[in-house]
Length: 484
Picture (cartoon, rainbow, N blue to C red):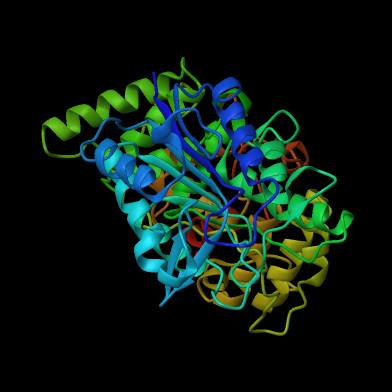
Protein backbone atom coordinates (compact mmCIF):
# COMPACT_ATOMS: atom_id res chain seq x y z
CA UNK A 1 0.00 0.00 0.00
CA UNK A 2 1.47 3.34 -1.06
CA UNK A 3 2.27 5.98 1.55
CA UNK A 4 0.89 9.47 1.03
CA UNK A 5 2.42 12.28 3.10
CA UNK A 6 2.45 16.06 2.74
CA UNK A 7 3.62 19.40 4.09
CA UNK A 8 1.02 22.18 3.87
CA UNK A 9 1.84 25.81 4.72
CA UNK A 10 -0.43 28.86 4.59
CA UNK A 11 0.49 32.34 5.84
CA UNK A 12 -1.61 35.50 5.92
CA UNK A 13 0.26 37.72 8.40
CA UNK A 14 3.98 38.58 8.27
CA UNK A 15 5.98 40.17 11.05
CA UNK A 16 8.15 42.30 8.76
CA UNK A 17 6.00 42.75 5.66
CA UNK A 18 3.13 45.21 5.44
CA UNK A 19 1.25 43.33 2.73
CA UNK A 20 -0.87 40.71 4.51
CA UNK A 21 -2.78 38.15 2.49
CA UNK A 22 -6.45 37.39 3.08
CA UNK A 23 -6.92 33.77 2.10
CA UNK A 24 -3.54 31.98 2.07
CA UNK A 25 -4.21 30.45 5.47
CA UNK A 26 -7.66 29.27 4.37
CA UNK A 27 -6.24 27.86 1.13
CA UNK A 28 -3.83 25.73 3.14
CA UNK A 29 -6.59 24.57 5.48
CA UNK A 30 -8.75 23.51 2.52
CA UNK A 31 -5.80 21.68 0.96
CA UNK A 32 -5.10 19.88 4.24
CA UNK A 33 -8.76 18.85 4.52
CA UNK A 34 -8.78 17.58 0.94
CA UNK A 35 -5.61 15.53 1.37
CA UNK A 36 -6.78 13.98 4.64
CA UNK A 37 -10.45 13.43 3.87
CA UNK A 38 -10.63 12.82 0.11
CA UNK A 39 -7.15 11.84 -1.07
CA UNK A 40 -6.48 9.45 1.82
CA UNK A 41 -3.18 10.95 3.03
CA UNK A 42 -1.94 9.35 6.24
CA UNK A 43 0.28 12.22 7.41
CA UNK A 44 0.03 15.95 6.77
CA UNK A 45 2.33 18.47 8.49
CA UNK A 46 0.14 21.59 8.56
CA UNK A 47 1.97 24.83 9.36
CA UNK A 48 -0.36 27.67 10.30
CA UNK A 49 -0.06 30.90 12.28
CA UNK A 50 -3.07 29.65 14.30
CA UNK A 51 -1.50 26.30 15.14
CA UNK A 52 -1.81 25.20 18.76
CA UNK A 53 1.46 23.28 18.36
CA UNK A 54 4.45 25.56 18.67
CA UNK A 55 6.58 23.48 16.30
CA UNK A 56 3.96 23.91 13.53
CA UNK A 57 3.96 27.70 13.54
CA UNK A 58 5.26 28.72 10.08
CA UNK A 59 8.52 30.30 11.22
CA UNK A 60 11.76 29.77 9.34
CA UNK A 61 13.30 27.73 12.17
CA UNK A 62 10.31 25.38 12.40
CA UNK A 63 10.10 24.68 8.66
CA UNK A 64 13.87 24.32 8.34
CA UNK A 65 13.99 21.95 11.29
CA UNK A 66 11.37 19.69 9.70
CA UNK A 67 13.24 19.69 6.38
CA UNK A 68 16.55 18.94 8.10
CA UNK A 69 15.47 16.32 10.66
CA UNK A 70 12.59 14.50 8.96
CA UNK A 71 14.34 14.29 5.57
CA UNK A 72 17.79 13.32 6.78
CA UNK A 73 17.13 9.63 6.02
CA UNK A 74 14.69 8.04 3.51
CA UNK A 75 11.36 7.07 5.09
CA UNK A 76 9.36 6.32 1.93
CA UNK A 77 9.89 4.17 -1.16
CA UNK A 78 8.93 3.62 -4.81
CA UNK A 79 5.22 4.05 -5.36
CA UNK A 80 4.88 6.53 -2.48
CA UNK A 81 3.83 10.18 -2.78
CA UNK A 82 5.01 13.32 -1.02
CA UNK A 83 3.32 16.68 -1.64
CA UNK A 84 4.56 20.12 -0.55
CA UNK A 85 1.97 22.93 -0.71
CA UNK A 86 2.76 26.56 0.08
CA UNK A 87 0.40 29.54 -0.02
CA UNK A 88 1.95 32.85 0.92
CA UNK A 89 4.55 35.34 -0.26
CA UNK A 90 7.55 34.42 -2.38
CA UNK A 91 10.61 36.52 -3.16
CA UNK A 92 13.51 36.35 -5.59
CA UNK A 93 17.07 37.59 -5.25
CA UNK A 94 20.17 37.05 -7.39
CA UNK A 95 18.31 34.53 -9.54
CA UNK A 96 17.20 32.41 -6.57
CA UNK A 97 13.61 31.77 -5.45
CA UNK A 98 12.63 31.89 -1.77
CA UNK A 99 9.46 31.20 0.20
CA UNK A 100 8.79 33.70 2.97
CA UNK A 101 8.02 32.30 6.44
CA UNK A 102 6.02 34.38 8.87
CA UNK A 103 9.21 35.88 10.36
CA UNK A 104 11.00 36.46 7.04
CA UNK A 105 11.86 39.97 5.89
CA UNK A 106 12.86 41.46 2.53
CA UNK A 107 15.97 43.27 3.82
CA UNK A 108 17.84 39.98 4.32
CA UNK A 109 16.23 37.53 1.91
CA UNK A 110 18.92 34.85 1.82
CA UNK A 111 19.20 34.49 5.61
CA UNK A 112 15.60 34.98 6.73
CA UNK A 113 13.66 33.12 4.04
CA UNK A 114 13.68 29.53 2.73
CA UNK A 115 15.35 28.64 -0.56
CA UNK A 116 13.12 26.67 -2.93
CA UNK A 117 16.24 24.91 -4.18
CA UNK A 118 16.93 23.68 -0.62
CA UNK A 119 13.32 22.52 -0.24
CA UNK A 120 13.53 20.47 -3.44
CA UNK A 121 16.84 18.92 -2.40
CA UNK A 122 15.48 17.86 0.98
CA UNK A 123 12.18 16.54 -0.40
CA UNK A 124 14.06 14.26 -2.79
CA UNK A 125 15.73 12.59 0.19
CA UNK A 126 12.43 11.17 1.49
CA UNK A 127 12.64 8.13 -0.83
CA UNK A 128 9.29 8.61 -2.61
CA UNK A 129 9.55 8.53 -6.38
CA UNK A 130 6.64 10.95 -6.82
CA UNK A 131 7.25 14.38 -5.30
CA UNK A 132 4.87 17.23 -6.05
CA UNK A 133 5.72 20.84 -5.26
CA UNK A 134 2.70 23.19 -5.39
CA UNK A 135 3.43 26.90 -4.93
CA UNK A 136 0.86 29.69 -4.73
CA UNK A 137 3.52 32.25 -3.91
CA UNK A 138 3.83 34.77 -6.74
CA UNK A 139 2.07 37.44 -4.68
CA UNK A 140 4.56 40.23 -4.17
CA UNK A 141 3.50 43.32 -6.10
CA UNK A 142 6.08 45.57 -4.49
CA UNK A 143 8.99 47.01 -6.46
CA UNK A 144 11.64 46.03 -3.91
CA UNK A 145 11.70 42.37 -4.86
CA UNK A 146 10.94 40.25 -7.92
CA UNK A 147 8.35 37.46 -7.88
CA UNK A 148 9.43 33.82 -7.92
CA UNK A 149 8.97 31.16 -10.56
CA UNK A 150 11.77 30.85 -13.08
CA UNK A 151 14.41 29.16 -10.93
CA UNK A 152 11.82 26.88 -9.33
CA UNK A 153 10.79 25.56 -12.74
CA UNK A 154 14.41 24.95 -13.75
CA UNK A 155 15.26 23.18 -10.48
CA UNK A 156 12.17 20.99 -10.59
CA UNK A 157 12.91 19.98 -14.18
CA UNK A 158 16.51 19.07 -13.35
CA UNK A 159 15.61 17.15 -10.17
CA UNK A 160 12.63 15.18 -11.53
CA UNK A 161 10.16 16.86 -9.19
CA UNK A 162 6.68 17.75 -10.44
CA UNK A 163 6.08 21.44 -9.81
CA UNK A 164 2.80 23.29 -10.18
CA UNK A 165 3.05 27.09 -9.88
CA UNK A 166 0.04 29.35 -9.52
CA UNK A 167 1.12 31.52 -12.44
CA UNK A 168 3.82 31.92 -15.07
CA UNK A 169 6.95 34.03 -14.41
CA UNK A 170 6.26 37.79 -14.31
CA UNK A 171 2.57 37.25 -13.48
CA UNK A 172 0.76 37.72 -10.18
CA UNK A 173 -1.30 35.14 -8.27
CA UNK A 174 -4.58 36.72 -7.20
CA UNK A 175 -6.95 36.33 -4.29
CA UNK A 176 -10.67 36.82 -4.95
CA UNK A 177 -13.12 38.17 -2.39
CA UNK A 178 -16.15 36.43 -3.91
CA UNK A 179 -14.42 33.05 -3.65
CA UNK A 180 -12.87 33.69 -0.22
CA UNK A 181 -9.82 31.97 -1.70
CA UNK A 182 -6.85 32.37 -3.94
CA UNK A 183 -8.03 31.73 -7.49
CA UNK A 184 -5.31 29.12 -8.12
CA UNK A 185 -6.05 26.99 -5.06
CA UNK A 186 -9.77 27.22 -5.80
CA UNK A 187 -9.19 25.81 -9.29
CA UNK A 188 -6.66 23.28 -7.98
CA UNK A 189 -9.11 21.79 -5.50
CA UNK A 190 -11.83 21.74 -8.14
CA UNK A 191 -9.56 19.88 -10.53
CA UNK A 192 -8.41 17.36 -7.94
CA UNK A 193 -11.89 16.85 -6.53
CA UNK A 194 -15.17 15.50 -7.81
CA UNK A 195 -15.73 18.44 -10.15
CA UNK A 196 -12.63 17.94 -12.30
CA UNK A 197 -11.70 14.34 -11.41
CA UNK A 198 -8.21 15.00 -12.76
CA UNK A 199 -6.46 11.76 -11.88
CA UNK A 200 -3.17 12.53 -13.64
CA UNK A 201 -0.71 15.43 -13.74
CA UNK A 202 -1.47 15.90 -17.43
CA UNK A 203 -5.22 16.18 -16.92
CA UNK A 204 -4.82 18.46 -13.91
CA UNK A 205 -2.57 20.76 -15.92
CA UNK A 206 -5.15 20.99 -18.71
CA UNK A 207 -7.84 21.81 -16.18
CA UNK A 208 -5.80 24.54 -14.49
CA UNK A 209 -4.66 26.35 -17.63
CA UNK A 210 -8.31 26.74 -18.65
CA UNK A 211 -10.02 27.21 -15.29
CA UNK A 212 -7.71 29.76 -13.62
CA UNK A 213 -7.91 32.34 -16.46
CA UNK A 214 -11.66 31.73 -16.61
CA UNK A 215 -12.12 32.50 -12.90
CA UNK A 216 -9.91 35.58 -13.16
CA UNK A 217 -11.89 36.83 -16.14
CA UNK A 218 -15.19 36.32 -14.34
CA UNK A 219 -13.93 38.28 -11.33
CA UNK A 220 -12.29 41.09 -13.28
CA UNK A 221 -8.69 40.11 -12.53
CA UNK A 222 -5.72 40.22 -14.96
CA UNK A 223 -4.49 37.14 -16.75
CA UNK A 224 -2.92 34.39 -14.65
CA UNK A 225 -1.67 31.17 -16.27
CA UNK A 226 -0.52 28.29 -14.03
CA UNK A 227 2.74 26.58 -14.97
CA UNK A 228 3.27 22.82 -14.56
CA UNK A 229 6.68 21.18 -14.95
CA UNK A 230 6.78 17.38 -15.28
CA UNK A 231 10.04 15.88 -16.56
CA UNK A 232 10.68 13.30 -17.86
CA UNK A 233 7.46 13.02 -19.86
CA UNK A 234 6.41 9.90 -17.92
CA UNK A 235 5.85 12.15 -14.89
CA UNK A 236 2.93 13.85 -16.61
CA UNK A 237 1.14 10.49 -16.85
CA UNK A 238 1.50 9.61 -13.17
CA UNK A 239 -1.79 8.96 -11.44
CA UNK A 240 -2.27 11.36 -8.55
CA UNK A 241 -5.68 10.14 -7.42
CA UNK A 242 -6.37 6.46 -8.23
CA UNK A 243 -10.09 6.72 -7.45
CA UNK A 244 -10.59 9.01 -10.46
CA UNK A 245 -8.28 7.13 -12.83
CA UNK A 246 -9.83 5.98 -16.11
CA UNK A 247 -8.83 3.02 -18.26
CA UNK A 248 -7.18 5.49 -20.61
CA UNK A 249 -5.06 6.88 -17.75
CA UNK A 250 -3.92 3.39 -16.79
CA UNK A 251 -3.26 2.44 -20.41
CA UNK A 252 -1.08 5.50 -20.95
CA UNK A 253 0.92 4.64 -17.84
CA UNK A 254 1.34 1.07 -19.10
CA UNK A 255 2.68 2.35 -22.40
CA UNK A 256 5.31 4.39 -20.56
CA UNK A 257 6.19 1.41 -18.36
CA UNK A 258 6.66 -0.90 -21.37
CA UNK A 259 8.81 1.65 -23.16
CA UNK A 260 11.20 2.40 -20.31
CA UNK A 261 11.50 -1.32 -19.56
CA UNK A 262 12.55 -1.96 -23.14
CA UNK A 263 15.05 0.88 -22.74
CA UNK A 264 16.45 -1.09 -19.76
CA UNK A 265 15.58 1.64 -17.26
CA UNK A 266 14.35 -1.06 -14.93
CA UNK A 267 14.03 1.03 -11.78
CA UNK A 268 11.78 3.60 -13.45
CA UNK A 269 9.81 0.82 -15.14
CA UNK A 270 9.21 -0.83 -11.76
CA UNK A 271 8.01 2.47 -10.29
CA UNK A 272 5.56 2.94 -13.15
CA UNK A 273 4.22 -0.60 -12.86
CA UNK A 274 3.75 -0.11 -9.12
CA UNK A 275 1.63 2.94 -9.96
CA UNK A 276 -0.39 0.90 -12.44
CA UNK A 277 -1.17 -1.52 -9.60
CA UNK A 278 -2.15 1.34 -7.28
CA UNK A 279 -4.83 2.38 -9.78
CA UNK A 280 -5.73 -1.13 -10.96
CA UNK A 281 -4.89 -3.64 -8.18
CA UNK A 282 -5.87 -6.72 -10.19
CA UNK A 283 -3.84 -5.87 -13.29
CA UNK A 284 -1.96 -9.05 -14.17
CA UNK A 285 0.28 -7.32 -16.71
CA UNK A 286 1.62 -5.15 -13.90
CA UNK A 287 2.09 -8.13 -11.57
CA UNK A 288 3.97 -10.08 -14.26
CA UNK A 289 6.06 -7.06 -15.23
CA UNK A 290 7.19 -6.39 -11.65
CA UNK A 291 8.21 -10.04 -11.32
CA UNK A 292 10.01 -9.95 -14.64
CA UNK A 293 11.90 -6.80 -13.64
CA UNK A 294 12.87 -8.29 -10.27
CA UNK A 295 14.43 -11.27 -12.06
CA UNK A 296 16.24 -8.98 -14.49
CA UNK A 297 17.62 -6.83 -11.69
CA UNK A 298 18.75 -9.89 -9.75
CA UNK A 299 20.57 -11.24 -12.77
CA UNK A 300 21.98 -7.76 -13.46
CA UNK A 301 20.66 -8.15 -16.96
CA UNK A 302 17.53 -7.48 -18.91
CA UNK A 303 14.82 -9.81 -20.23
CA UNK A 304 13.08 -8.56 -23.36
CA UNK A 305 9.43 -7.74 -22.85
CA UNK A 306 6.81 -10.12 -24.24
CA UNK A 307 3.14 -9.03 -24.06
CA UNK A 308 1.11 -11.19 -21.68
CA UNK A 309 -2.38 -10.54 -23.07
CA UNK A 310 -3.99 -13.35 -25.05
CA UNK A 311 -4.76 -10.84 -27.79
CA UNK A 312 -1.11 -10.06 -28.35
CA UNK A 313 1.20 -12.31 -30.32
CA UNK A 314 4.49 -13.05 -28.62
CA UNK A 315 7.47 -11.70 -30.47
CA UNK A 316 10.47 -13.82 -31.34
CA UNK A 317 12.78 -10.87 -31.83
CA UNK A 318 14.26 -8.99 -28.91
CA UNK A 319 12.84 -5.46 -28.73
CA UNK A 320 15.10 -2.63 -29.80
CA UNK A 321 15.38 0.41 -27.56
CA UNK A 322 12.77 3.07 -28.20
CA UNK A 323 13.78 6.74 -28.36
CA UNK A 324 14.60 8.09 -24.92
CA UNK A 325 12.06 10.92 -25.13
CA UNK A 326 8.46 10.78 -26.30
CA UNK A 327 6.94 13.81 -27.93
CA UNK A 328 5.76 16.35 -25.30
CA UNK A 329 2.46 18.15 -25.55
CA UNK A 330 3.18 21.63 -26.83
CA UNK A 331 0.78 24.37 -25.65
CA UNK A 332 0.98 26.21 -28.98
CA UNK A 333 1.79 24.18 -32.08
CA UNK A 334 3.33 26.23 -34.92
CA UNK A 335 1.44 25.32 -38.12
CA UNK A 336 4.53 25.08 -40.34
CA UNK A 337 5.23 23.36 -43.65
CA UNK A 338 8.34 22.92 -45.76
CA UNK A 339 6.12 22.45 -48.83
CA UNK A 340 3.67 25.32 -48.30
CA UNK A 341 0.84 23.05 -47.15
CA UNK A 342 -1.91 24.77 -45.12
CA UNK A 343 -2.73 22.78 -41.97
CA UNK A 344 -5.29 25.25 -40.61
CA UNK A 345 -8.28 23.05 -41.45
CA UNK A 346 -6.65 20.03 -39.80
CA UNK A 347 -6.02 22.09 -36.68
CA UNK A 348 -9.63 23.31 -36.58
CA UNK A 349 -11.08 19.82 -37.07
CA UNK A 350 -8.94 18.43 -34.27
CA UNK A 351 -9.77 21.35 -31.99
CA UNK A 352 -13.49 20.61 -32.37
CA UNK A 353 -13.07 16.83 -31.94
CA UNK A 354 -14.11 15.88 -35.48
CA UNK A 355 -11.75 12.93 -35.45
CA UNK A 356 -12.83 11.12 -38.63
CA UNK A 357 -12.77 14.27 -40.74
CA UNK A 358 -9.41 15.14 -39.20
CA UNK A 359 -8.09 11.69 -40.10
CA UNK A 360 -9.21 12.10 -43.71
CA UNK A 361 -7.75 15.63 -43.79
CA UNK A 362 -4.47 14.20 -42.49
CA UNK A 363 -4.33 11.81 -45.46
CA UNK A 364 -5.13 14.63 -47.88
CA UNK A 365 -2.44 16.91 -46.51
CA UNK A 366 0.16 14.16 -46.35
CA UNK A 367 -0.46 13.42 -50.02
CA UNK A 368 -0.06 17.13 -50.76
CA UNK A 369 3.17 17.42 -48.76
CA UNK A 370 4.57 14.35 -50.53
CA UNK A 371 3.50 15.58 -53.98
CA UNK A 372 1.26 12.53 -54.48
CA UNK A 373 -2.21 14.13 -54.61
CA UNK A 374 -3.00 12.80 -58.07
CA UNK A 375 -1.79 9.27 -57.31
CA UNK A 376 -3.81 9.15 -54.03
CA UNK A 377 -1.39 6.82 -52.26
CA UNK A 378 2.04 6.98 -50.67
CA UNK A 379 5.00 4.77 -51.44
CA UNK A 380 7.61 3.77 -48.91
CA UNK A 381 10.09 6.18 -50.52
CA UNK A 382 7.54 8.98 -50.09
CA UNK A 383 7.39 8.28 -46.36
CA UNK A 384 11.18 8.15 -46.13
CA UNK A 385 11.45 11.55 -47.82
CA UNK A 386 8.44 13.11 -46.10
CA UNK A 387 9.39 16.62 -44.87
CA UNK A 388 10.33 16.71 -41.18
CA UNK A 389 8.61 20.01 -40.47
CA UNK A 390 5.32 18.82 -41.92
CA UNK A 391 5.49 15.50 -40.06
CA UNK A 392 6.08 17.32 -36.78
CA UNK A 393 3.21 19.74 -37.42
CA UNK A 394 0.75 16.93 -38.14
CA UNK A 395 1.89 14.83 -35.20
CA UNK A 396 1.90 17.68 -32.67
CA UNK A 397 -1.57 18.82 -33.70
CA UNK A 398 -2.91 15.31 -33.05
CA UNK A 399 -1.01 15.03 -29.75
CA UNK A 400 -2.15 18.45 -28.52
CA UNK A 401 -5.86 18.19 -29.28
CA UNK A 402 -6.18 14.58 -28.10
CA UNK A 403 -4.34 15.49 -24.88
CA UNK A 404 -1.56 13.02 -25.68
CA UNK A 405 -3.88 10.18 -26.66
CA UNK A 406 -3.43 10.14 -30.45
CA UNK A 407 -0.57 10.88 -32.83
CA UNK A 408 2.16 9.18 -34.85
CA UNK A 409 4.66 9.67 -32.02
CA UNK A 410 2.26 7.93 -29.59
CA UNK A 411 1.97 5.02 -32.05
CA UNK A 412 5.74 4.95 -32.43
CA UNK A 413 6.24 4.51 -28.66
CA UNK A 414 3.94 1.48 -28.59
CA UNK A 415 5.34 -0.02 -31.80
CA UNK A 416 8.92 0.14 -30.52
CA UNK A 417 7.93 -1.13 -27.06
CA UNK A 418 6.76 -4.31 -28.84
CA UNK A 419 10.10 -4.70 -30.59
CA UNK A 420 9.13 -2.96 -33.84
CA UNK A 421 11.86 -1.75 -36.20
CA UNK A 422 12.01 -0.53 -39.78
CA UNK A 423 12.03 -4.17 -40.87
CA UNK A 424 8.49 -5.49 -41.11
CA UNK A 425 7.70 -8.42 -38.82
CA UNK A 426 4.22 -9.93 -39.07
CA UNK A 427 3.98 -11.03 -35.43
CA UNK A 428 5.05 -7.63 -34.14
CA UNK A 429 2.69 -5.89 -36.53
CA UNK A 430 -0.23 -8.02 -35.37
CA UNK A 431 0.66 -7.38 -31.73
CA UNK A 432 0.74 -3.66 -32.53
CA UNK A 433 -2.68 -3.91 -34.23
CA UNK A 434 -4.09 -5.64 -31.15
CA UNK A 435 -2.64 -3.00 -28.84
CA UNK A 436 -3.99 0.06 -30.68
CA UNK A 437 -7.36 -1.52 -31.44
CA UNK A 438 -6.99 -2.06 -35.19
CA UNK A 439 -7.44 -5.82 -34.72
CA UNK A 440 -10.25 -7.52 -32.82
CA UNK A 441 -10.42 -11.29 -32.31
CA UNK A 442 -7.41 -11.73 -34.61
CA UNK A 443 -9.17 -9.89 -37.45
CA UNK A 444 -8.13 -6.53 -38.91
CA UNK A 445 -10.90 -3.93 -38.82
CA UNK A 446 -12.08 -2.09 -41.90
CA UNK A 447 -11.61 1.68 -41.89
CA UNK A 448 -15.28 2.38 -41.13
CA UNK A 449 -15.10 0.03 -38.12
CA UNK A 450 -12.54 2.18 -36.35
CA UNK A 451 -13.52 4.30 -33.35
CA UNK A 452 -13.35 8.00 -34.11
CA UNK A 453 -13.75 9.28 -30.56
CA UNK A 454 -11.70 9.69 -27.38
CA UNK A 455 -12.95 6.35 -26.04
CA UNK A 456 -10.80 4.62 -28.66
CA UNK A 457 -7.63 2.90 -27.41
CA UNK A 458 -4.50 4.99 -27.00
CA UNK A 459 -2.76 5.45 -30.39
CA UNK A 460 -5.87 4.31 -32.31
CA UNK A 461 -5.59 7.42 -34.48
CA UNK A 462 -4.54 8.73 -36.90
CA UNK A 463 -5.04 6.06 -39.52
CA UNK A 464 -4.37 8.78 -42.10
CA UNK A 465 -7.40 7.93 -44.19
CA UNK A 466 -7.36 5.00 -46.60
CA UNK A 467 -3.71 4.53 -47.45
CA UNK A 468 -3.47 2.16 -50.39
CA UNK A 469 -1.15 -0.54 -51.80
CA UNK A 470 1.84 0.03 -49.49
CA UNK A 471 -0.15 0.96 -46.42
CA UNK A 472 1.51 -1.46 -43.97
CA UNK A 473 5.03 -0.98 -45.25
CA UNK A 474 4.51 2.78 -45.35
CA UNK A 475 3.27 2.96 -41.79
CA UNK A 476 6.07 0.72 -40.52
CA UNK A 477 8.50 3.10 -42.21
CA UNK A 478 6.72 6.11 -40.70
CA UNK A 479 6.83 4.69 -37.16
CA UNK A 480 10.56 4.14 -37.59
CA UNK A 481 11.28 7.79 -38.39
CA UNK A 482 13.82 9.21 -35.96
CA UNK A 483 12.22 12.66 -36.04
CA UNK A 484 8.98 11.52 -34.38
